[in-house]
Image (cartoon, rainbow, N blue to C red; front, top):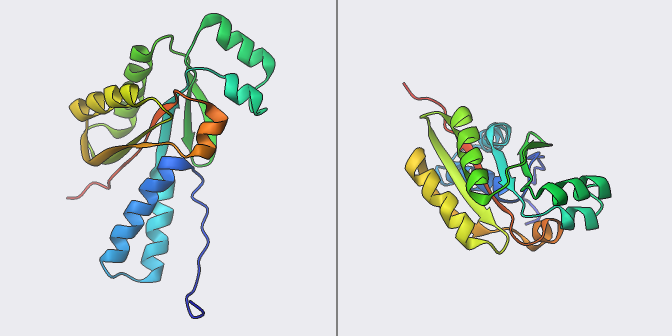
Length: 178
């Protein structure tokens, strides 16, 4: 270990989106490439990977101070499932569907605009909500040219801030080959 060089890189993402970066980097390492190519793989994948997900409530984000009491109250009164997208280090609200079915449909529509028919990599994560994650898996499976899709749990750190019910997916488009 004394002679191992360590390279620190900012993925500008979190959770399952970081997992996809690690999987792509691992594939590059297994192919016996150079450290520069590995760093380029991390940088390229980090710039392409996106995360989109929806919450059952803003209550846990309110408790952690990540949303204001007025934002929480408004979302609670109209009973929405806030939808967020994380891309290149920026978290943006992208929708407020009222039902899980509409949330999943909205996620699929956003993903179609970004992925089209391209070959892609997708991973789904949930916070104690396997049934909705499975429904999302089915919709993605029916609509995208994906490789090695899987479902996993969110980390406890993410779950502590979002509470139970969070469902989301990370994805990126592979470069077009000619």
